[in-house]
Image (tube, rainbow, N blue to C red; front, side, top):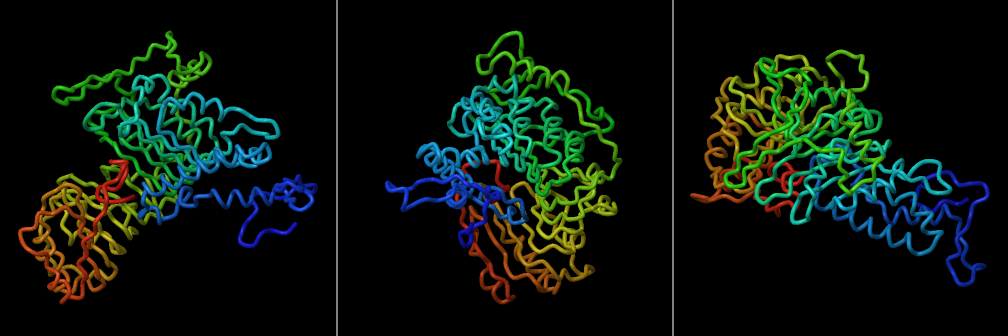
Length: 481
């Protein structure tokens, strides 16, 4: 059978292929199902949505979500054209699942667990990307639902055994700053048990996970290429017990809206969202949660990981891992002892080419020395305190091309950082490859930007205007991604 030029068939054609009549006169217009499937696939495919390459470091998340939503609407419309079209689109309808309303979770779980006639496996086996965005914006969310089944994302993770991308942001639906739920460690165990052999991209936002449980979970995910976890808390060996039980209660001080969170769901009472057998599964998953067997000792090797973002980096714990391909690191560092102590470890990520940094007590000169392959440095200047650098005794950094000073809401004036630090390094011939300094407003300028000074040194000073993200907190501190 001829294959349309430029298109790749998603599966091998059968010897006796069914046909679809696409004209009132079937003798004039007859196509094998595989050709129709290939055309519809090409028309609805969003390659960015399944991307796990290093290019996601620069991803415009809002744009990708909009493309996926448009594609999902097109798929749903095509599936209603005829039974034949529905059968074709069944292969792709659940490939990417995005959830913005909890109301859809129970019926979605039922559909993903259903095996329809003509298929060997349940629909969930076709799901490659699963996104949760609950409690965001003005879309209502039943907060209590979290404590009934949130520790397995209501069974959806186990219903999708071939999951390659998991992205989740679930917060309480309260006015003001986002407040996370209490999260039972069964969630991390579920991810480790169900996704170890398939997951390539994992992004978790605002769940509050302690660093020891980050270690426990990541060591299983050897296929992982990109990981972003926001809400990481410290593990203090002098106080904490490694992988102990989660707290059942937490008080969040927020003035008049202070609240006490409690993980005390009464499974003897039906919520009405799920049937009794499903609720029984949720209860058993929490009571019987455990880590899968694991025999390898530290250091744990993640051979494919190229992008890592933990909102707070605890290098004292990351020495448990080896990241031989790590290139993009998003690092928040507030410890007073600097980075030199951790840089002596054999597994310190010196291979980094793109670094996003926020912190204090780490001057630019130290960053240049510790990351010799660095090509782009992005500094979130609002939460950072950057000491002045002494460049006299450091070697030139041959690779750094771009430095970005970024902010969303601050009134910080970048003049001194540009003139007295970055341009000082250029004058001292310590940054021979630097070609651009980017600024992300808003700024309150006390004077004009040093455009002519930068130009005289062969450096472009660029002001980058970006719209605020729809999914606040899911992007990097300063721009998309």
